[in-house]
Length: 157
Image 1 (cartoon, one colour):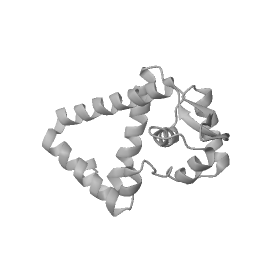
Image 2 (cartoon, helix red, strand yellow):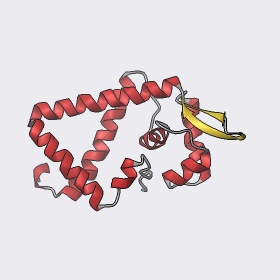
Image 3 (spheres, one colour):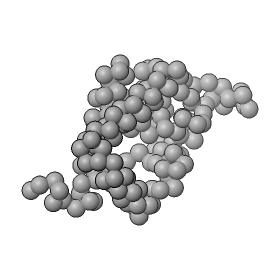
Image 4 (cartoon, one colour):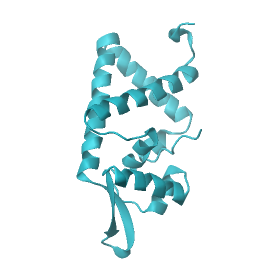
């Protein structure tokens, strides 16, 4: 069977999982090792916010223990830190460190490189068509608003 013969619902997770692995490999080239696919979901929550562990858990669709584990792993790697929130010194928020901002930029560069490779292979028009098709698929499956809010839940097994 040729990949082009597969339907989009089959191709999408195959491509998505492979792209994530490739991006993690490219980010590791820049010295950012130890990351797992689920870490990206948490990091996205920290781009514009400093949520609490319970806030992270709720938005990720996981338990507080699961969110704490993810944060602990990213703390050990130097990508996030917990700090008391100015509004309420009793509450601790999670935020990206400078190293966390670096990995965010490394991920953006890796995605831009991969997209440039795709454009070189199939052209800008087909790449933009693919983007529209996949964005429409996100809307059909109900993730469009989650993407806009940076609140896509961690995929289940």
